[in-house]
Length: 210
Ligand code: T5A
Image 1 (spheres, helix red, strand yellow):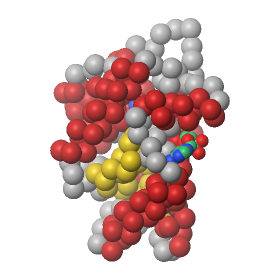
Image 2 (tube, helix red, strand yellow):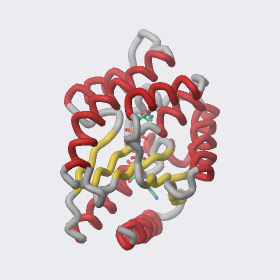
Image 3 (cartoon, protein in one colour):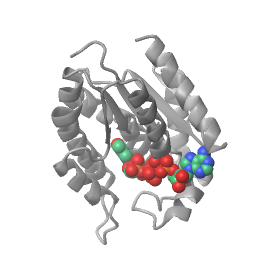
């Protein structure tokens, strides 16, 4: 693995502004001529994108929490083996819209699956693959949900109850406090221009330390 290549994950609740921040990141990396790929979870490979549809499309059959967790990891394994690791090996920066922290936040804190089970899957399948930096975009769940409601129809997870999203948010904030070297939090309840400015400043800091 090229030691200069960075693996950056972007996390946060629904509509927290991940896609928006990724546009800022891409434009900054392009300006700096830093070769990179942008990818996402669930998804990132053709097969993982099909798993994404299984996970997000509404269905008459209840998707059980354990099945949901395993599908996220099936998608993640395809993604990490076929996309993330090869890109890092080539020296490309990888910007991933969500990674394994999301399983701890959503399937762990949100659905109530024991953390040790998720840790087992993480250690088995990902081994030492872990983001160098994680940007946590934080806003009260109601703010993010209002934004995505304004955008259109909600997916299978977005229709969850507010308690679920509060647990997800709390988990992310606690994890960010525990792993403060890796995490950087940006409050996205403010204006788009503030979020853009803060995202650029954070990235400049990373690039200066490269
Ligand atoms: N999931 C995922 C799990 O349960 N476990 C896992 O392991 C993984 C990997 C899909 C779902 O899967 C779950 C989490 C999710 O429920 P997703 O595709 O990342 O994950 O879905 P969302 O989080 O719902 O992503 P969205 O695309 O809906 O939201 P974003 O990207 O956070 O938000 P964005 O940038 O598209 O912004 C939403 C809207 O708000 C506006 C934007 O213009 C846009 O219209 N906006 C702002 N408006 C005003 N002020 C600001 N500061 C704004 N920032 C953005």
